[in-house]
Image (cartoon, rainbow, N blue to C red; front, side, top):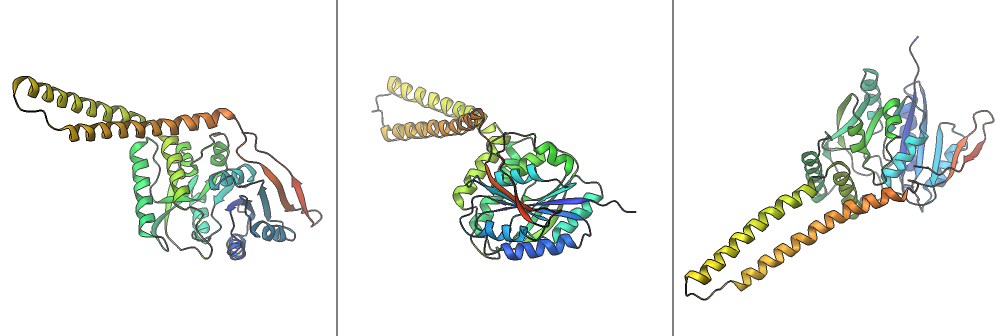
Length: 328
């Protein structure tokens, strides 16, 4: 008799009422085809539309549905983290609610997991419905991150992936506040493999990662896994200092050994501006690292949960299962 497994599907959502019905339908169809037990963990990251209410309605009659309702918006990466904290499955899948990542690919991930891989991530070969700038900036970020860290973080991947139970348990032990989940999954190791796919455009609604949030995520990724920007400051500073010293010697030599009027004050001003600009940039980089150290020392919880909704299997009634604040 074949062993039966249980799967936990984590779906972070923020103002996704336009797509949530189709997301629920497709996930139910895919997971129902496995013939195995599963739970759909919808994490409401402070939505102000009807997303949470729609999931509550599903939870009234579908015991596979659970809603983790945040007290406010804590961010996409934190919503994923909360899902992992509540997940009970032998394998845990992360997928966004916007259907850019096809739920049907979960079946291929499960097949790879059953072959013995402990992490199966989805690598994008094409990104539909995104601007040329976003594609270029995302490609650049992954390659800069890979070049600046010793952790092998796959390029062209998002958070869409399957993790074994033991990987999820190790992820729950990582306490940092400014989280970059896909990097942390690479850092913990285990046997990992990729499945390639073409990413669709959003079914409806607007992207939840505009430029400001993309920059924040990029900074979280780089500062979490690399201190090379701090080393770069020393290297560039040394080069500029040597260049400035050589220029100073040439000015002194010109004043002592020639009768020509010393020129080049505009160039001196330009050099000073370059030096000062570099100093301010490096102060900004130092500030990013210090700010993240400060966040870690405050020891606030990663998130606050207002309510958790799911059906009681014994009574068939939907109920509030608790109010929980994550303590890490």
